[in-house]
Length: 68
Image 1 (cartoon, rainbow, N blue to C red):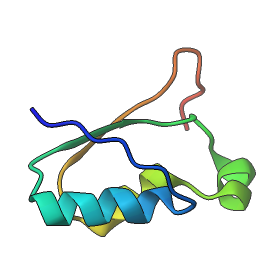
Image 2 (image 1 turned 90 degrees about the vertical axis):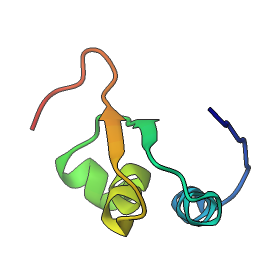
Image 3 (image 1 turned 45 degrees about the vertical axis):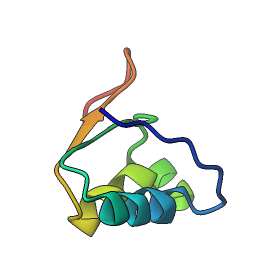
């Protein structure tokens, strides 16, 4: 298992680029559990990573987050 830490103003881009470069098999990430207007206004890194299709993604919501 390989782990990496990168700092960026474009986290979804860094995650997707790294996944492509390293040919990752799987991505696991936590979400803020936002939905609706909050997600629309603030965007969603997790959503952008999922939509990239670079690898299967497991999303984990924080405890107490509401389900849509």
